[in-house]
Length: 317
Ligand SMILES: Nc1ncnc2c1ncn2[C@@H]1O[C@H](COP(=O)(O)OP(=O)(O)OP(=O)(O)O)[C@@H](O)[C@H]1O
Ligand SMILES: [Mg+2]
Image 1: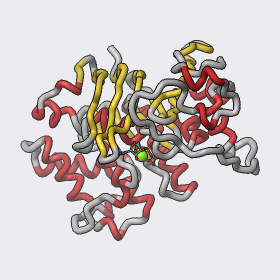
Image 2: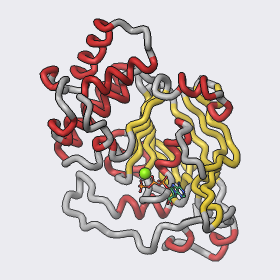
Image 3: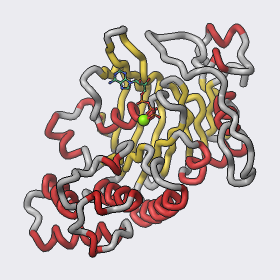
C-alpha cells in the first residue's frame, strides 16, 4: 500500500473578490522512505497543498473534490478525534519560516516535551527526558542547550529544534515547507545532509517544498513542478534535471544557478505568476510560454508519459 496517495484534488479559497482556484487536478503519491519535492514560484500553491495533507487549512479554504489517502484512509473523511491522532503522529510539518515560530518564552527542551506529552499523556518523566535528549542528539543540538530559550539559539540551531519537534512523535511522513530557505548556504547544506541521513535511517518519507529546483534535485528522489495550482511535470530528479520537458520547468532551471555552471547568470522568467479564478481552460502557463500556440489557450493539456514515470502536461509534447 502506498503511504500517501492524492487523487484529483481541487481546492478554492473564497475571497471577497470571488473564488480563487488554488489547487486543481493534483495527483501524486509518496512511497515509504521516499522524498518527493514540490517546486514552483511563489503563490503556485505549495503551502496550500502541504496544509491540505495535514488538514490545517484556513476557514475560507474549500476542498472541491478529490481524495487524500494516507495508508489507504481518506483523511478528508476523518473525524476530529481521528485527525488529532493523525496529525503530528502520522504526518508532521515543518512550517515555512518555522524557525521563528518557536515560543519565545519557553525553553526549547520544554516545548518539545510538551509536544510529546500532548499526544502521550501517560509517558513517565524519565522516558520523556530520554526522548527529548535523543531528539537533541539526532538533530545535532548540544544537550547543554536543552534549557535555553529560542533567542539564545542561532538560526541554524532554531531550525534544528524545529526539525526535532517534527520528529518528536515519530511520524511516517514529514512535510518540510521551505525548511532551510532562511539559512545561509553552508548551514542549509549541513542540515539537509543530516536530514537525509535521518530520513534513510528511519525510512521516513518527506514532502520537500521549495522554490529552488536545484536544491530539490539534490534532496529528492522525485520532483513535481507546480505552476498556477497545477502540477505541470513530475518525474525522478534525474530525469527532470537531465531532460526537463515542460517549458516552465526549463525556464525554472535556467533561472537558477547550478553547481556545475556556477557563474551562470540568473535569468528571470518573463511575466507574472497567474491567479486563476474559476475553472479556467487551457494551459496556465500560456501567457508566459515561449512555445505557446493558439490551441494552448483553449485546450487543457492532458498528461503525457515521456519516459518511465516521467509525466508532463503540455500540448506541445
Ligand atoms: N487564506 C487565503 N485566502 C485567499 N487566498 C489565499 C489564502 N492563502 C493562500 N492564498 C493564495 O493561494 C495561492 C497559493 O498560496 P500558497 O501559500 O499555497 O503558495 P506557495 O506556493 O506556498 O507560495 P510561497 O512560495 O510564497 O510560499 C496564492 O495565490 C495565495 O495568495
Ligand atoms: Mg508557501
